[in-house]
Length: 102
Image 1: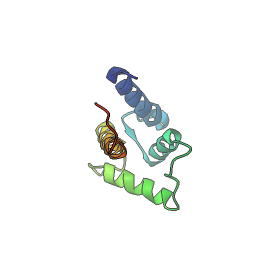
Image 2: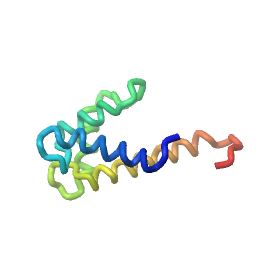
Image 3: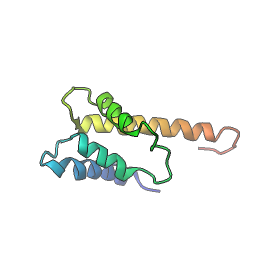
């Protein structure tokens, strides 16, 4: 298992790796955000639906709370926190009926 400090470092590093591509390391533009999502996607995932492009656009609009047209670090972390909640709910649902102690 990865310790929380290492996991946080990876999240920060990924943001800055993609945010700095256009010279502004403080936010992700639409292209950087899409590239980051595509690079992190599991090849076997179901994200590639027929509405994939529209989904990425809607996700970016929903995350862009200050309506700047870009995703800043706080908005990115809101995305990751939301994703963690969904993953936890999925894990808990998939564990129903199992008798594991967490």
